[in-house]
Length: 144
Image (cartoon, rainbow, N blue to C red; front, side):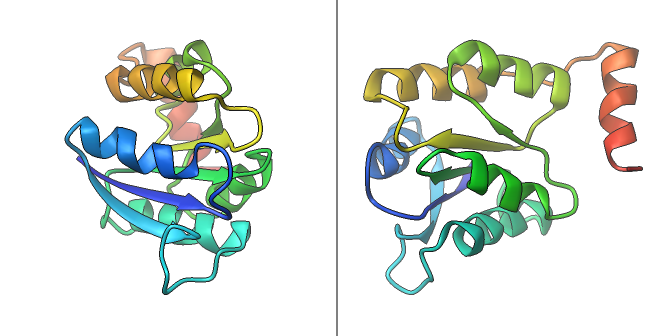
């Protein structure tokens, strides 16, 4: 899978996200502080990764900032993106299952190396729900 990754700094687990995804066999497209050619501010970096998903250059994205909130907000401004700020594996699994989230947002401040591995495992193993109610909710997001 091709996954865009954006971070506004190299603090916390920013570089570990890239390493962990590559170790799982994914192609990583770096943005922001992870790319020498790009602006590293959270709004710009997260938008770049989200646009990769929206425009079909990536299957999914992971966006990171100090709290994860700004990265999530920026990514969600891009049409077709459903970004979820996840702090644990349960939240990541639910975001994939019930929300068909295609962008994972994480906090560089709060996410430990161990939690990152658990979050990524749950996120990457997660599949969208086949329940008609869940699918109707996700479809409605496109109408809002």
